[in-house]
Image 1 (cartoon, rainbow, N blue to C red):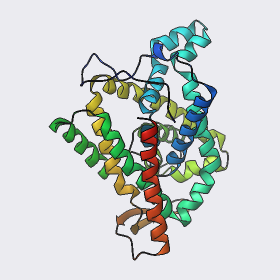
Image 2: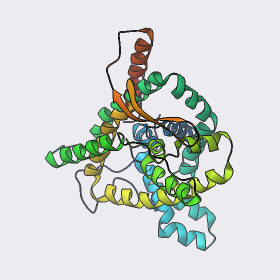
Image 3: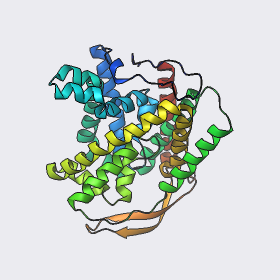
Image 4: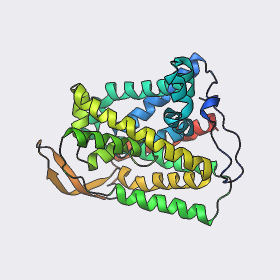
Length: 329
């Protein structure tokens, strides 16, 4: 499972070198099979994004499309795209933002959200340990895999990794709050969630949980509440295009440090993804749903059938990433 998007080799951090091409270099055409592969990657990202605590950005990292995704989104606010669009040169505008790539990935995400939201909601309610175990194996393996993108580690990079890990550790341990359902807040929720969603280790769904909007948005998807989804989606569009500018700038000038921070974010997020938890405090929201506010991780009980299956799924998740890493070096 390889993509024909190849970044030039990097020797060290430098302000005048970039891991990813400029929008003008997005002209490479893929085959139908390769676009289908991108849709499959998007589907995996969508599955991850549905689960609070798992980041679609992590899946993009694992599947080797993260930096192309960031640069493609960034191009939506750059001059080549708007220059072509204002001149009504639609083909040039689409090429400027790598539209074929984005549409393939977004199609996969949309398919996952529309088809699996109800199922994953049921699994999270009835078999949370199993799904958390699988994703724990995925994220843990991704840390092992992504570290190889930095050729030479030093004290500064380890410090950046530690900062990312500590930050994510405390974010994922934050307590959810109850918030309004006004249009402005739904728009803001979309902005914040999408920024987190594109960051490996920080789950956009979990940010929605913290903002008290996860169940609201999930219900809107299942009930096809177009107005609410459009408001959240508009905020997401504004947030992701804006945040992509920052990420692209960091990749261009501080590539290795940025990668180190992102690895740290994934490491810190393992606190949230640990399968065995005990809820010690909860609240009842305005819809009568019980929301856990404080959870403590603990070791699994005796080796029961469920624990054995959970460990098997964790190993399967780990192995899956290692295989993908071999196929997409």
